[in-house]
Length: 113
Image (tube, rainbow, N blue to C red; front, side, top):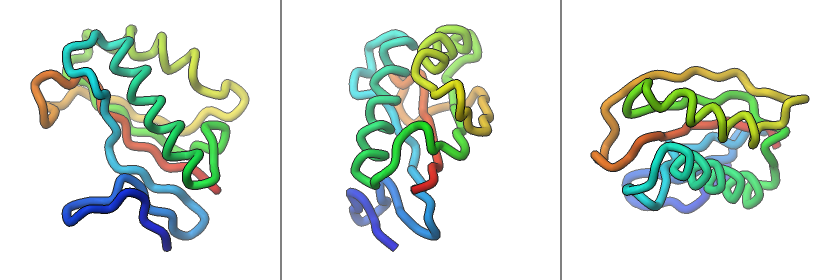
């Protein structure tokens, strides 16, 4: 087992059993619109996948939390351009109250090595 970027509360990702399990990834710019926040979040996922030795074509599943379902179309616009259409993961998406009022999206992903 390998932990990526751990601290006393969480690891950003954990590699175990041939899988990369990521904690919730969010954008850096809390004032940005849904498209920008989604782009920033997916860039973080790309970076973690690369560090773990994987990539988006090996995604197994994704859970997407939105501040409001009004952002669903904007998030999907960015997601659809990012995802490998030949290897789409399973996915769930819902509306939740996020940890910071400025956050519009949080994505939790699992990928194969």
